[in-house]
Image 1 (cartoon, chains in turn blue, cyan):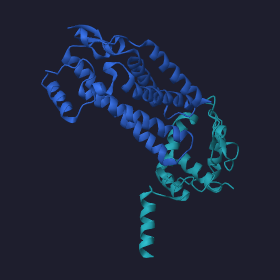
Image 2 (spheres, one colour):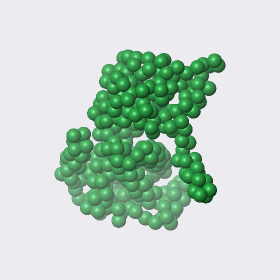
Image 3 (tube, chains in turn purple, yellow):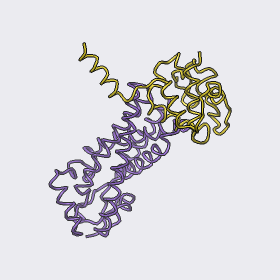
Image 4 (cartoon, chains in turn cyan, yellow):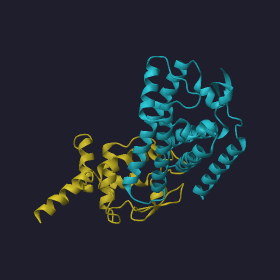
Amino acid sequence: MQKILVWDWPVRLGHWLMVGGFALAWLTGDSESLRLVHVAAGTTVIAVAAFRLLWGFAGTRHARFAAFVRGPAAVRRYLTSLLRLEPETHVGHNPAGGWAILALLGLALLTGLAGWATYEEIGGHWLEELHEGLAATMLTVVIVHVAGVVSGSLAHGENLVRAMFTGRKEGAPEQAIPSARPLAALLLLVWVAAAGWWMLN
Amino acid sequence: MKTLTALALLLVAAAGHAETPQAITRQYADAAPAGFVPAARRGEALFRQNFAINDKMPSCTACHTDHPKNPGRHAVTGKTIRPLAVVANGERFSDPAKVEKWFGRNCREVVGRACTPGEKADFVAYMNEVR
């Protein structure tokens, strides 16, 4: 086992853009003077989630949904192994992490769309309530996800937060991805900026 | 017919307590110190007061214009805000939870602190009575 490249640039950049966008959107949610900051942050969240959905089919090996989305039995097995402090090894996302990703992507899109509809005054007061309920649900899943990352890091003896920065994890050389796909990450940046520009104009 | 009436009442109840502005004024007045009597005049003064806490939104009128009967304009986004005055917008001050939520947000940001129950009672009274 050695350090190999597992997460490509779009996965890492998208992850941290999502973190920043959601945190900023959460913090500015109640403010009218920061309304445009909130809208820009929310637009970042939607744009990143939409990109990640496509990247789940067109991305590198460990970024693809087919590589990490598993059924409930696999999730139960992984969580049991984690509780026994003998966690199953997954070079990419573990099955529980895979569910967190799906939940967070779905909630990011739904929360963002409900917020967008509220901002454009499509629908009514109920959309505003829905937007807030979805955001609170998303924060809950974020907390569960972070708890999972911390416990997984401790159980595996591998810093998974650092891996989301460097892209490198413990694994066999044949499981490494050949390229970090920097151009696709640039495309992600342009896409997020374009979405923000379009929303604010 | 009876069934329809019952159903209609049930729907109104399920839609989250629909209340009259008077009832909401009374609820806030009840939470104020004993002997408090709501006054639209004080509500108007609050509406017009320049708190100067927030550069973009120094007063309620920054977004809601000089008269609550007018549609407002969001000082940051430029989006239209429906009138605050009940006479111009019958939906205003009919949902206690919504009223409390927006007092919470806007008082903190424009007044710079939470509004007191008495101030809220005065404000709702003004918006209900202004013609």
